[in-house]
Length: 238
Image 1 (cartoon, helix red, strand yellow):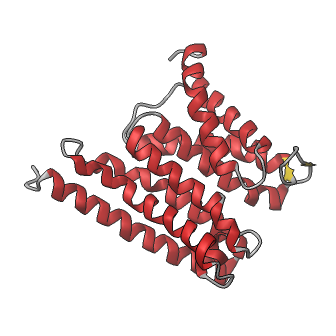
Image 2: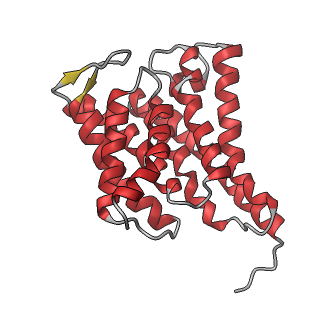
Image 3: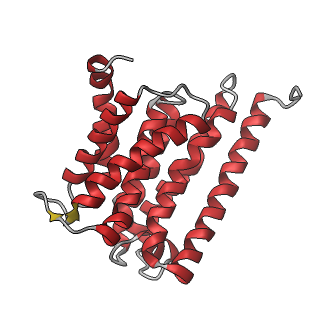
């Protein structure tokens, strides 16, 4: 059935659904923290925020308002910076959900980097392959601590980095990125990249996450992936 909505109204409605979706995500993260396991809320919110890309195909690019796709991550990023740098309330719900050490300062790093990266993707890489690759890496990165805490046996630590496990940072990120590439490509109706390219991006994401400085993986991993995208396409042509 043909839609009678104007592009502006269509994009505003899609943005509203993104807002409602993220509100539900926050409630789900709080519930898991209080009822199940505190360590789940942070990776869960990371996955759900980066999964906002599944709404992007519904934006109408014929109007400037398609850029509203960046509204939710922009607000989340500013909120994390405000609460981590100005309010600094150690009992705030966002600190409890997102901080690894109950420190408001943690919100200035990983918690704010991810939404700001999503803003960049939404404005400058809209519906390009990078929109599936980077969120896929965020999915793998979010699975890393969950896998590492349960199955991790082989510890390592890079200079300026935190102690990690091979099972989480290498295996978890690698497999999670592969799964994420398939999932996000399908959900956005994008042509699936060849398996060899997906494996290459997943390996790059795993190495970048394993070697990133402490609390910088949400920034280091997408930067490495974005800068390596052209080389991967040249060396491993589709």
